[in-house]
Length: 119
Image (tube, rainbow, N blue to C red; front, side, top):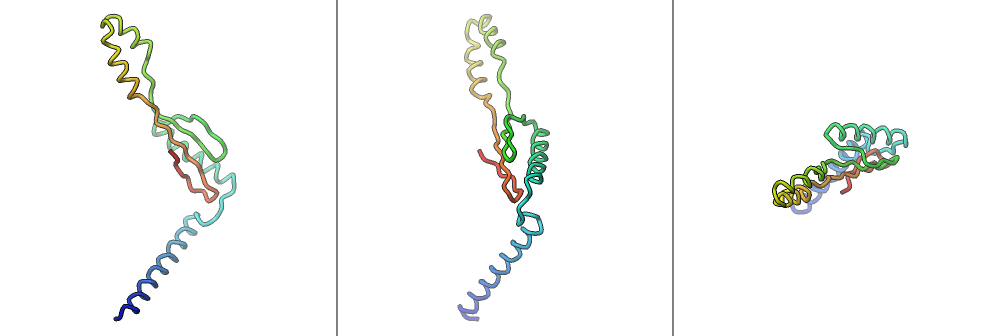
């Protein structure tokens, strides 16, 4: 087998692979545009799955949603704990406050029904 034959064989394999990928995309529904109602339903299902993992709904539009997860420290409690500890508790309070940020996820659904996460 010469180099030319090898090249054509590899090219044929790549073409066949792309055909299979396209066929899979169409069979799985990614090849067709979804109606707005279908897209809203898919996004709603995704929101439900994320909420079950502990995320809270922050903002939602028809095809975009912002979810967040996290807890704020109880600032009143930490302020009161500073008095009996003569201010030493401020260090603990600062560390807790700096490490207690929210994790936000933004999801968008494309016109093909694919949900994309944007950070």
